[in-house]
Amino acid sequence: MKALKLIAPNQMEIQEVPIPEPGPGDVTIKVAYAGLCGTDMHAYQGGYSKTRYPVVLGHELSGIVTAVGEGVTKLKVGDRVTSESTYKACEECRYCKSKDYNLCGNRTGIGTNRDGAFEEYMTMAEDRVWKLPDNVTLMAGAMSEPLACGTHAVIEVANVQPGDTVCVFGAGAIGLMVAQVAVTAGATVILAGLTVDEDRFKAAKGMGVQHTVNQQTQDLTEFIHSITDDGVDHAFECSGALVAVHKAFEVVHKKGQVIQMGVFSDDYLPISMEYLLHKEIRYMGSRSQKPSSWALAMDLFTKGDIKPELAISMVVPLERWQEAFDSEPGGKKLVKFDDFGEE
Image (tube, rainbow, N blue to C red; front, side, top):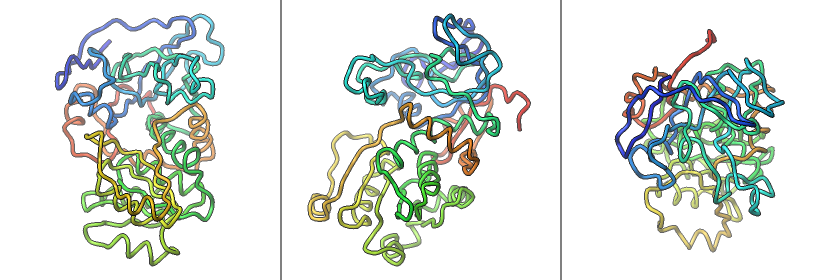
């Protein structure tokens, strides 16, 4: 089979490798689509410290189960599936005991320290694999991981409620998933971006987002104060831009929440103590997803009120992987292995 392997920073190649056999408790998945995440880009460029070379990148996927290992009981050959990004965790730390596997310091993640989804076949622990609802295409299913990141941030971290107001900074795939989940939670959502995000603004409207603001042509603060009482309840920073953090602090009302999802190139950054202290802002991080986040994402899929596939901006075959990695930021890029006849 073909596998896209990262040998060293900025050095990736397609290799012929054996099809992996599932071990006890594992299943083998024939990959249909694999998504390119910002973490993959950081790893490719040598900027993600958890990467263990050589490795097959990719932790967003959909596919079909082709083989099951000893002890597998919940899945069978032919099942249409997607997968969490955690292969296994230590199961001993305080975070594993509460099933916060995204916070386990000894977790094994696919696409970082274990081969991931940019290959024709991959193995995965059955407990981390989710069967896709019948109404979900494999292409949409490949958006499950960013959607689960959205349910974790919006529902589990921020606890967004019906009637709340939300501002999302960044119109990439994560920003769009966060905005869409917030809409399903009953919030009024403002998606803030730039002129280059016009296509993503259209996608957001198709997802039910009520307001989009191009910050290069419109005053975001003025707009927010025109539709809210002193600011939004929640601001989600999904762009990894310091200026967006500062603006988020500005546009939330007193005692509002700012949820950090975007990743910065620098570890230590200056933030406004004036806003943080005197507005009593709650500034929180939201990292990845956990099993309960996936249950929420699958529930949204089953209900059918979401359209995560609208965030997809490019689909290329494996042989053209470089096009996806070299493309402009924004939107979700997928590598297509096999669509199994689905549209």
